[in-house]
Length: 223
Image 1 (cartoon, one colour):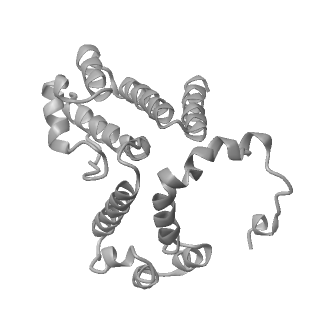
Image 2 (cartoon, one colour):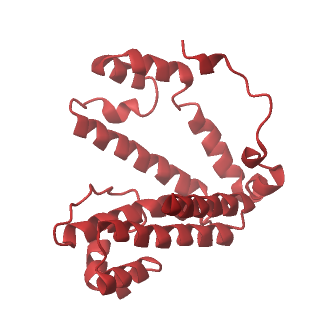
């Protein structure tokens, strides 16, 4: 048995501690009460530690039987190949996000905060596919807020895209960056946009999260 299963953390390090004041905005029952209730119900269908351990030990058919105990099993019932599993999990994730979007206030920026990474992923895939010698990454359809067709049109006419995507495309077209430079370019726009959304949402916790992500990205650049 791995030794870490027997360990116990006596106290949370200061840099991991989250004060309740930082997440207070999500305790506003009039604004987030319905969404919190929906999340609590959905939590019951998450993969717990016991199911994960069973999955690790199971073969493919056994894993499908275990997953059939939770909601995502319905999306994998006919899966026989790896790509079919990927498609099923993507469809499940898409429906989860859709449910959360319906539960949140109409003026909330939370969904865009979490989903904009898919738009930037698809934008990067399009840019790499259009670059000479670039390899296209797989698209993640239906998970972001901007459709693939709209992103493709935006590659030809950046002004049709919302900010910060149009600025990212214009910079790409002007600079013609290499693969590593492209990653840096899009990460900069993505991380800055997420910090902007966190501030718009008025959540100190999300602001801390977005700021820490920027610090981590900067640290990776210098090590």
